[in-house]
Image (tube, rainbow, N blue to C red; front, side, top):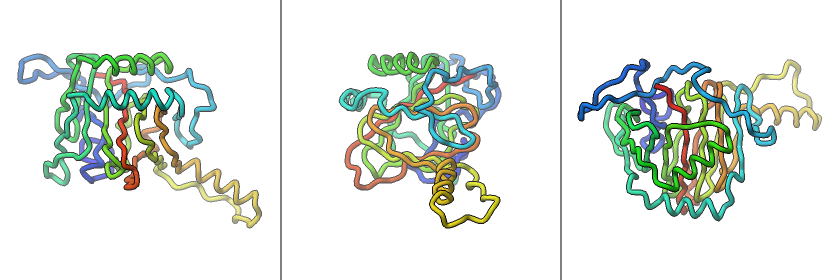
Length: 269
């Protein structure tokens, strides 16, 4: 992804979530003269609240990670209703990205909201169009996620995948984004998680018996994981997950319906 993040992807539809390019907590004055606070990249562990309320049955079997998948945060009918209402938001737009030094318009639409009227983040080097008047439905959804997880968020970032041709390439959110919760609405899409390192080789030569084969498969699963994001499902990634793992929503041409993801973050400034 573009140079303002830690991603390796470069396609215009594979752009990263919004992150500031500034490491300091300094405030800057915008064109209107109002002071803006930029989200920091470097965040201490004591500056965020971790999710501790979820049962182990929701935990993803990943090495070097603390991640969860709740397949039924809300039922499918409710998820579709929310999708249809959010699709009507006036705040959707296609951001401009820097790809190999050139400005391009992303195919995937986004919308960004913050509970802090002075918070500013950047997306591939460009300021995000940040909105502070939450639509009632989005406020309701964030309240539900916060209650379920026992964590407060100050930023909601929406992505619109209009069909299976729209995707996001292999990337990681900023490494200091310690708690991220992402809700899926609309069409099911595949979610791929990939560890930075390959699975460790067995100390002894692999045998041909069934138990050895099964053990090898389980080990491989710890370092590469693929599953379908169901409508109404919630993914949580926290702690060191972003340091060791990348994730992606690959192209799926057979998918004709749209999907909206809402990613909630704790941004520290």
